[in-house]
Image (cartoon, rainbow, N blue to C red; front, side, top):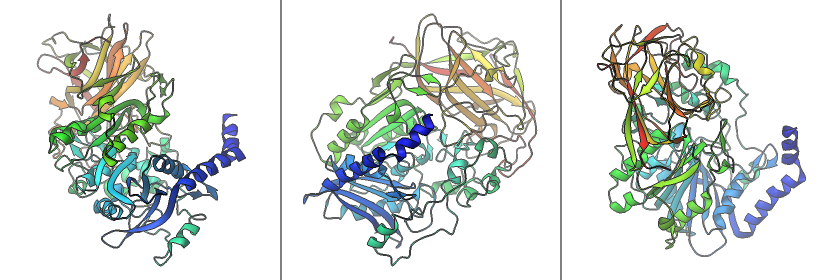
Amino acid sequence: MKKRLLIFLLTSPLFSWAQEDVLKKLQAIAVIDQKVMMPMRDGVRLATDIYRPKTDKPVPIIFSKTPYNFNSWGNGEARNGTYQSALDAVSRGYAYVVQNERGRFFSEGTWDILGIPTTDGYDAFEWMSKQPWCNGKIGTLGCSSTAEWQMAVASLDHPAHVAMVPQGFGAGVGKVGEFWEQGNWYRGGAQQMLFTSWLYGTQNDAVRPLFPKEATQEQLVRASRYYDLATEMPPVDWSKAFRHLPVTDIIKNVNGQQGVYEKMIRRKPNDPEWFKGGLYHDNMPLNKPSFWFVSWYDVSCSPNLALFNHVRKSAKTPQIADNQYLVIAPTLHCAYKRATENTVVGERSVGDARLDYDSMIYGWFDLWLKGEANDFAKKTPRVKYYTMGVNKWQSSETWPPATSEMTTYYLHSGGKANSLYGDGKLTTQTLPKEDKADVFTYDPAFPVASYGGNVCCAGNSVQGGSFDQHQMEARHDILVYTTEPFKDGVEMTGTIETTLYVSSDAKDTDFTVKILDVYPDGRAYNLDETILRARYREGFDKEVMMENGKVYKLTLSPMSTSNFFAPGHSIRIEISSSNFPRFDRNLNTGGNNFDESKGIVAHNQIHHSTLYPSQIKLPIVKTKL
């Protein structure tokens, strides 16, 4: 019934009228200049739509660059998404410019992820800033792929690029601090499989339809009503497609287009190619006032927070450091504005998580692009973050908050922490001298299924968000460690650090960790998750295999959250060796993994004693809510 109602609404005269109304409002106040072919330094031209106020005065620009389709027509029908964004900007006195990356839709050239070369962004700033209708100030705005290119281009320091608003920007972060995610391709050295399904729908074959170079702007605008040059990819059941081995052939196996995936999947975390593209790395300057937006259930929360801190610490002037602001919302990837009075993320309600994002963002741009002496700095905290469990917005001058103190919880058991029904405990008490290791079997043919989590873009294989995990915890290959229920409520806000002492009979295997809020009735909601491929325990720039039975210290990539554990609740961690298809399966052979089709079973152990103090450090806030 709901589906029929949606189809009716989308095809009804009322919906068409609403689309026409947006366009009419825009036409009344804006000069609309579509399919401008903006030249780059190598002669390649990028398709650009420009919407600017009807005024003789120069205006600032809000610029969005994207690999996605912003054509005003599709399947014979008008699309008003871009018109609405343009109307929002133009009605506030800004020009709105949206551009396709090279190799996408009407843009010329060959596409590569993040719209490289990075100089395309610089050249766009140069072209726009010289237009007579521009006041010489440009701000960049976008979420996900429309955000992820911003940092690397900002490092080129074009003088017209005055301020940024990157949202959900993790796929633009290469190496920052201890994170070597290379644009979310990895977590802890394991591939994040979301890019396989995303690239299936995004990358182009070497041959694609294009209009001739001599086509006029008028001809392109007219043609765009009938042709949007979008690929029509057949739907894929990714819950099945991800299981194909080797992973190098997953897209080929579903008859997808061949492109950048086939070369990226063969890279290691330290491959030199990661440092030649459009990723931002922490050895690059970044000195632009920036308003950062992150979400707890995005795929890249922790590296994004690390980048915010890095920019504040490395800024060349105190003014730049002081003009970094951060919002952390309790939502999925780029779902900030979809928060409601009762925001449900997965199946957990986190309360009323709404914010007036437009007011905040345009207040920021008014300050930097128009030079208005507004009250943005006075009314905007340095860090505004949402604490789940108590379900409220809080603020801090730093991330993590200064009131957050690291508290060490040790893994305890009698050697039988397997499953929810085992004897695993988390405690602050001193560990015993005797090591009663917890043992489990990891078979790549029967991995632990991803259920919810901090993920996006994985098709129908994983639904992101927070879900009750207690039925999953019946598996014998999941170790479960839980605190005693809290007498008083406990707030955990900040970075979570995990150290495990492990052994295995495999040359290489993975270790996964998930942190959860356990309710008095037994429900256990996931907060964050991480992984480490054991071969990278000494750094992501080297691979060192394991020896049978030898105990190794593993420090996993940090997790992050803000959650209030109410009285009667407990903190829990799960440990296993797979979280599939959030992460690819380690086949345990010690080989390349990406080009292998057969795995072997690994028998893995978690050690905990005075000699092997497996632990998790939790950021406990000492002040009570």
